[in-house]
Length: 586
Image (tube, rainbow, N blue to C red; front, side, top):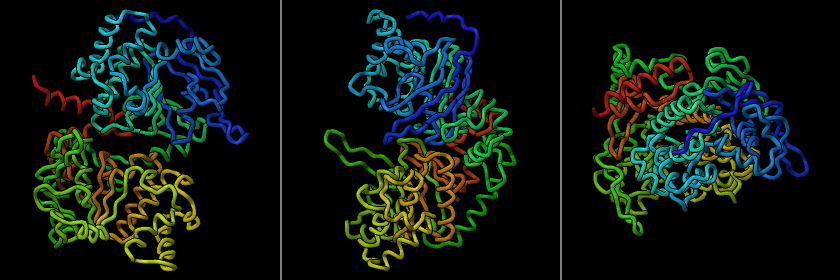
């Protein structure tokens, strides 16, 4: 085992940033990414830098370690433990990286080397910085993997990154990051790609490691719930500038800048019904008021459903298999799935990665065969449907994908992408097609002139609006939305969700909304279906599921959702700890 490094004494803050600016050379012009930033972080504390994509939060943080491309220009001062690190020689800066400042990246699959085992990558880091023997490095690596609470450290040590789950990969990358006992951890969107329960575990881990190692954390994120859960102080950035700073409690309770208020207002909050907030924390402890609210919601839902006759989508004891591919054997991804979605109804399908929720969505449009049971879409049994029958069904079903960039043809202008379904279905052509494309652009609140733009000329939110317009082109009776907002900034997400709400209300289509974000589902759905390990564990009215969950797994999901309120989040974290302790074996 390597002994903890002795930190040199310093007179001021652990990290001091003064007048830090970052510019990028683009077409012979300097384009500013960060302007005159000033902030500090103390040992054992966490500072959150928040803002939307393009605000400069990541660029300014990577500038500290000279990790920006060659067209970047960096000026200003960054002192770590009183020592200036801007302008260090390459070999000196190399010693700072990992040893004094470590980075936890957003996507561990791209940060970890895919051709080396996890253990060998940690050993390499230890031997470079400490010069210890391979056996000592191996012992320390296993100790680190145990420290980040991997269930089987030896198995993780011998595994390649692709053989671990997303949460396990993130833990392995954190183990590598803390291997040299760094003074400062830069966590760049460390939980964005994770399920809500895994996210809660990673935040617990980072909180524990911060106190155990007395390291500072620089948290880069756009998730205000994560900020409330982990950070002590906050810096809000917009267009490269700091617009507000302060303690998390102070800024959340009384935000001063309009942009900060806009960010906080855009966060979907579980339990928020219109302008009325319902205490979901109380639901975790079985509060009687929450139970009564849930009973009322369930009764109203039953009355509404009794008035409707034919479901738009119905699964009866459905099982779904993934067929054998090469050496990968066939396996059953979903079994005994039974539910119905009625006209005008939004049903949220929630669960962690691997729960089977996307598989259900794919089977509902015939992309995966039904192995057992009966599936009916808009009155048509697709359980044994052939290609011709599925083609007929597809006219009544639209789908919005998670990644708007990859779901649009980069070679087609967006007008052609929106009009393509109508053209192929023989629904419209010529001037009629042009008119309907314009109407769809109006419906998703995009300028008609955008019809001649290509996808790369649009922002992420604009591309998702195009995806929605395309999905609604044939006026479907059922819309399947598979994680349509997870790749978007919080304020863009809010506008897309509001658009979906309005369109669903105006057009009356049924919607299967697939997501792992319970707060987003709560803002849209009439009913919720909870999946776990390929099975439906609970379903019912939104109020019933979120305010009075019956199943332990649903309670864990709700308890893991971070709330953008530091005081309430502390209470929820304690409630979650009690819940997990009660479930763990003696």
